[in-house]
Image 1 (cartoon, rainbow, N blue to C red):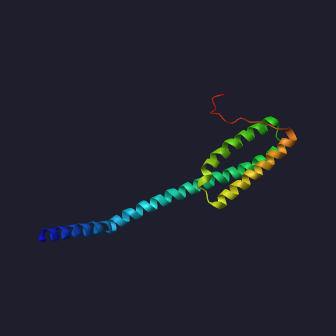
Image 2: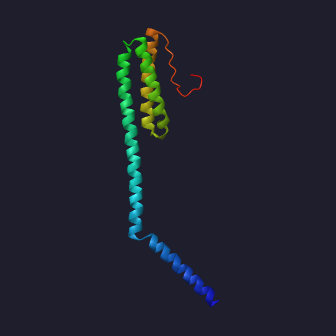
Length: 136
């Protein structure tokens, strides 16, 4: 019985020592540093996504103005560029908050209105941007 009791005490002492080690200030500092680093990376990713979105929104506004007088060839180029950039941002938009998604929808709706106007002016222009397709 005495040996069992001593083993239990030794086990408890090792457990307490392990918990004490885990809670020492150096370990906490390392953990906090790792958390801080992860938060910085997340913030950088968020800032990058916001920058890309802002650039795209400005581009859409500029191109919408140009589209009013664009030739059919210029419109095709604009539409192909829009489709490429939209696909890139759509792939990233799953991680955005609700407000960013709402703003993204507004930008896409704005472009759709521009598309409708141009199609009425110069007719329907079909642009194939699927460069990975094997049938191209």
